[in-house]
Image (cartoon, rainbow, N blue to C red; front, side):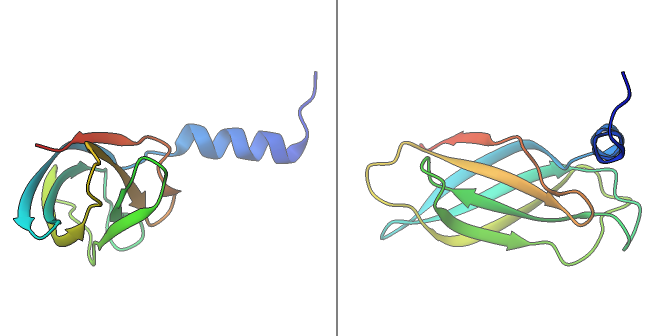
Length: 117
């Protein structure tokens, strides 16, 4: 069976993709419903042409609660940890989801569940 060219291209891109991996995450209440979220990422950054360039905090229904832009590659610092303060998490949520982004591959498919203390 011959695959259409577009299917072949998409499958090869998926096979080559190396998404940013969330190794661990933590949350610390700051008061008044605000939280500090810390995320440790691993990604085979190669330089300015390909690196993990952000992560977001989502509510369970997919609403974005915060975004941490990563402004430069971390070629020699893997895994690496970055934090985001002032994330307002609605009362009643017992967890949030975190998703990482890569400058080449875009948003990863995997969601990391972070249970709130």
